[in-house]
Length: 448
Ligand code: UGA
Image 1 (spheres, helix red, strand yellow):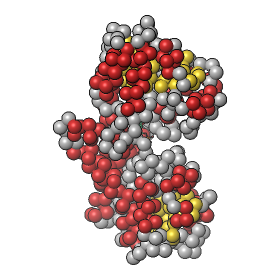
Image 2 (cartoon, protein in one colour):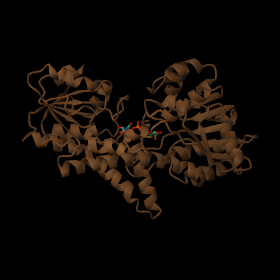
Image 3 (tube, helix red, strand yellow):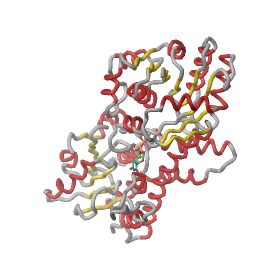
Image 4 (tube, protein in one colour):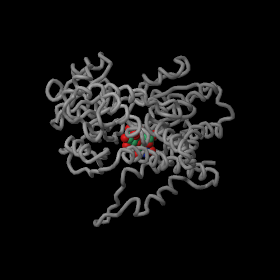
């Protein structure tokens, strides 16, 4: 099948490369000529595990990039809209979606054969039917359902695992105004193995995406609220509480052979210093304001955001518990990215924590295996020393704070065991065994 993908960001490029790998003839379109040139030269403008290799094996074969949207639409049967939806703190901005819909509509005016236009960007319920479809009709002078189809196909890609998530999906949601639209989309996904297919309306498809992310974000804030309660109750460790909860066989079923299965989502039920990234905070806030605009109070999701906004502060509270002033205290920040496996610092809890520590005049060193460059853009250069290794970064520190669950921080107890002076370890991700270091404290830990 011939597919055009408009927008070569994270969703668009991974999708374009993935569909090409599955044997479709794909052209990806972007207004940024430098990006298009890079893609055609086999260089990925974004970093995702396995993406560049897959791009290189398809470019010049099943895949090409172009700035010519008209040519791409005329020479394909299916167009996927994967442009950005910038967020102003409350609502998503649909201007790129509108612009691209209009341009595609104008091309459809002179296209004789049936074409399907599908929104892949994350958009609030109603956007595809009430914004994209009317623009397509107006710009083309044609009728949706007769001359062209309009669909919505959300993406469930995790940063750092995007290629694998695309190639091996757990579900494929095919939204559309009619069966003809969904059938065309289904053809694009025909060779994606045994993933469950959900055939539905555009609005439902849009809401599935937001609901999925809101649920995971809710689980994180729920666990963090319980962690904060453990601290208030005293003498209770949230790790023990959550272990007792996780062992419910409805959460972690026990196999016929007696072994317990730990589904991936259980890790969203662990406490920490809060969620970040480009999706959860933005998606939950966009859904709240959309719900409110429809008269729904969205009380639960508002609390999810409130708890998350307050959670980084708990790390500062823990430091305040141990030091009468942070002025001149040598603090090593371990982890800056919003999660392990990425250099992305968007909405990372580390941002507000480091800024507060700078304001409190702490003497800061920091280490992240990949996010240092991003951090250097965010913080004043003369206020943080970046270490090249964990050992170097914690040298002489009075306190260490673990802000990202990078596996290599598991080496800390070993590194610390050789030292005479033991620093305080504040484990804001609860990833270390609490007895593995001499002076341990953390989110939801009952240290006196
Ligand atoms: C998230 C969703 O997981 C994807 O399914 C979705 O497609 C994507 O948003 C999107 O909307 O594009 P992502 O933001 O890459 O993907 O991140 P996750 O790996 O889910 O992490 C989000 C937050 O959850 C992070 O703050 C992370 O620390 C936390 N997390 C992640 C956990 O608490 N436990 C985990 O096991 C994984």
